[in-house]
Length: 64
Image 1: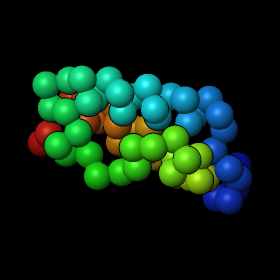
Image 2: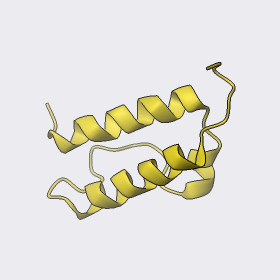
Image 3: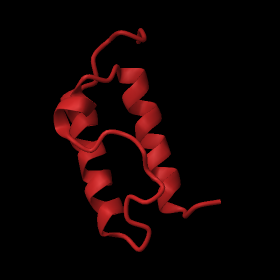
């Protein structure tokens, strides 16, 4: 996987799902400063999308 390989549609779909779930959570998007629209997420590379997915998962654990 190279840094410039585009994010997969599965990654984009998963990011959008996590963003929606986070928005509906007790924390909302207060601690999230990344993209919230599909086009912006789709512009990410696979590596960037993977990092974003992990960041969103970490936010579900609550802020530090």
